Length: 558
Figure (cartoon, one colour):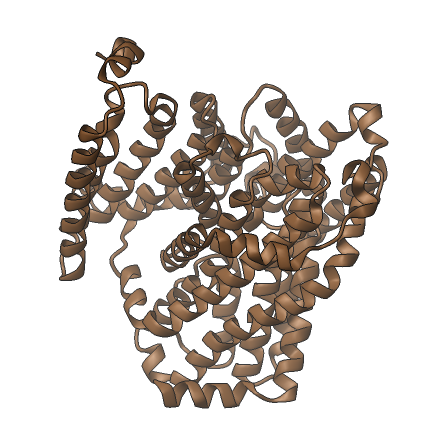
């Protein structure tokens, strides 16, 4: 493997390839920073320019666009509250509030360094264990994909811990949006009400921009006094990027960084999952593991570290699935899959062994692109931070203009503009009523995947038992159930007696599907989970501060 790495490095180490990668990284940063102009659009625009390049040059350039776009999305999300890409949705939860507190420089710095470390960790993991990771995707079947989507929706609903019912309703609204248009399985139009444009369904980009961008803009300018304030508040003129402090803050949270990065790699390996899911999952896990979960949503640095580390690491995992199985993890890797085919390279389970130099060149270009991203973003962020000095009403007009251009340029269809408008109104109303927006977005994105997987499952067999007997499907169903209950556990922890048993019992329950996965490693891991549960249970029972307080505080739980 070492010789292969040296050969791949030699192929990349020339001025022409590195120059292409620099341009690609810059293009990705710009595309990710502009709301409405997605990474996928940037990669699609770059693809024609790679036709006359060698496979290594072309794929390295597209990889640089990918990495730059993942990191560029945080700039828009933190400075304006509107994620430049779906993979930066969770970054806005704490990045934007921190920017509004006059700490935009710190928030951006933490985001940049988290992206860098997350991407670097993902690249190292891929180079070391790529063949093993590629085998996980082979285990997934339609039942497992459907359960994964249900789990993702319950996770986003659980983020609305104050009112999880509204979170679940929002997720169902997103699924409803995904059903509008022609059925992918039977080809039958649904919910189009005799309207021709609705037969095509709603494009994801106008829905995303409308729900996030337009609805937030309506909320920001409805109050004349706030509309005349600058985005960064009164301290906007004093904003300064503190890279040293930001890097130190990220390294101080090394466990959150490592956990989120590994979670991102794992989600990337799962076909059709992608960074849209991983950044939400990482944020959710960071919030649940935090000693101060109430700080999330108010400007917590952990809330920036987790999603940014995860979404950059996810890119690496998605590449494994794309190269080894020919299954794109998201639309970006789908375009890269097309680029491989254009260069007469056929992805297959033997791709890494058949094309070792090209495979490792892609891995190394992913690694190098993260360093380029750090350097370029460090230079250009000063210009982006100046956005915080602009008055809100002026910024609103500019953002809406770019959003409209991005939406119209996608398909050159007038109906997409109306989609942006009506979903902006819907998002504004739902925000006003206390409904979270994220579950709607995720439901709209994953609805077609869930429907297709369910249809395939029922086509294979009308028996529903595989949803509960297949290890991965059962694993995700149990995690989804845990996500729904967890907000209640967090509120009652330390006051209700049953909370002492919650984590140990669920660790034992989750060990069951892990054990069912077979092999050598996973049964051992299941055994470790059971031992952990027993030790934790004994610890909880021995260290009860005051049983009488627990009994009195538990109320109806007794």
